[in-house]
Length: 463
Image (tube, rainbow, N blue to C red; front, side, top):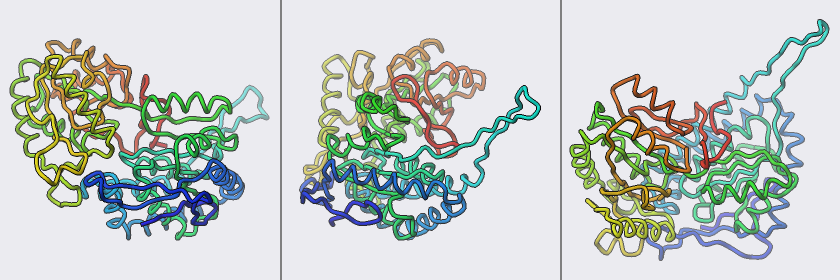
């Protein structure tokens, strides 16, 4: 399939004729489709048309904006299976996870469409009897929504929903690995009758198209999800025009299992959050700390549950973990595991490509469990973005918190304990924007989601 970009309400190709191939990570010989590779000038046109449309969309009554957005959501729900299949083909995740992502994305967009009707201002008294101070919330302008390939629809929805509902116009840029599902979703807004220029989608290189979306003076805000390294570059580039930024960056999230935890529940949660989407999640469990008194039991059960995970092509209904999405990701996971082993780590399960002809042409890597690991190893100190789970011991509460905080990141952390006081103390002492207690739900659209330290700043979701 060849899907065109959307600029000023029209489906457009690049005048240069350049295109980007999208390949199936489960079989890299299969071309799923292609999209245009726009020039910088064509990206600038998208920004300019969004700026022009903002003058009308920003003063459109909130109820009218909500009506169009909810109509688009309804159209997309009717096509959910089609969009999910495309997502699996280009990303590699299981079809079950793809369907969950489509549903969660549409739920999020609809949530903000309904919530915009309840955005209220504030009034404050002053020291003058005939004077009142009013606080009025207004849309900022053109928003560049730059989204990654691991959750291309959900992380777009977190930006798209509040931006459109509040009266901003949007230029979205999906990753070149996963542009097809994004375009399919945004086509639903065109069919719903969203005014020309309000919502645009452009594809192309980071150097050309991405640079325009970050540096163009008519862009008022950049909302970006991606690596910390890329986020730092965006901060520098956006500084010249003093843009508003929301940056959701790297994770390297810890999970702590205290001695009084429900071990079966802790293992269940840890396995799910470590290997979901092949570990390619910003809030994936990257490192696990278990109290020494329950360490052996936890490790044995964790390995047992990991062995049950069925790896394969995500389109197969019984598959529970698909391939990694990129070649670079596969090579990084392999490098990190090998480096850990060279420093004394032990692989209890996984650590390689699965055996069999069905795995040879894709970026498959077994879910991997490691012990005897420490903070000198890349698999512990870096954000792996792959299916690895290093498990370490601790003896005291203070040691567990210190190890959890021994990172430049601070996105999400997880704690398992039956002691409410311990849970509250840990949640307050861990340096992360979100702390899950006895669950591994890393983020939902009803509460604010954002990182501490080098995991970014600003929040998505909430109100």
